[in-house]
Length: 258
Image (cartoon, rainbow, N blue to C red; front, side, top):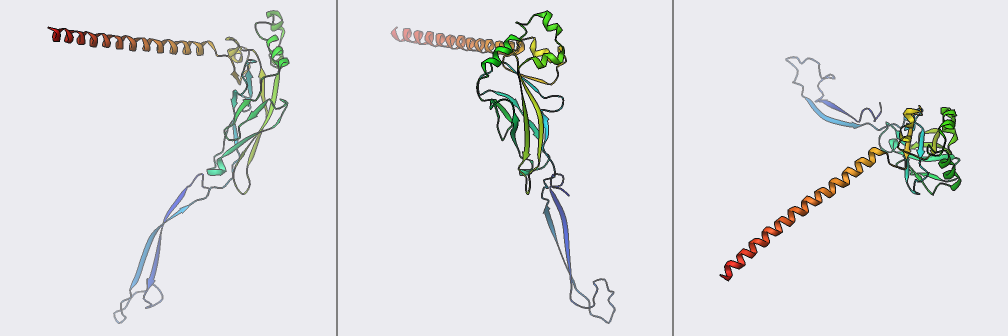
């Protein structure tokens, strides 16, 4: 029985006590024997089941088919580029997960927040990495050369970093841990088309950070325009009310003058 499945058990307990005439509460009483008195008491008992730390954290993001993050060279220092997500069915501290980067080839470029799995860009990307990413971008690489690159070579051509992650619960007496060996962070100049590279080129499992896509820009533009339209209507309404109020005051002043 484990606390993650059964939190509480409710049961009823009964206690019997005889006055001492005979040894059994169910012994028949003859006419010549005094009547036996049996005392009965019952109570409800609630038993809380303690959770056992018997589950290891399971990586939801990243996973086997979704383990690449694409970062634009213009991404600012301090940005959250990815969020690692794990699931532990245990409850309480047994299910509370802490994250860390075990190994990487990024020279301290990225860090992960222990309590929520957010991966940050701790400083600006190196200049040589930025230049290489721009050189290989869609706008600067020729279509003929691009067509000669296979799908695998296309991914390998861009600057990349690999992070080995670990997630541990806070259970007792011993924590349970899981590892993810190869979260890949790739630096690539993003354009409107490159947001759909994962579908067009079969590069599945990519997450993009940096420039906004065209539909995000449309949403932002519509929101800003709507905001100013609402402000315009509010201004017109307030102006109309002020004019009416001014006219009424002017008429009242004329009547008093007469």
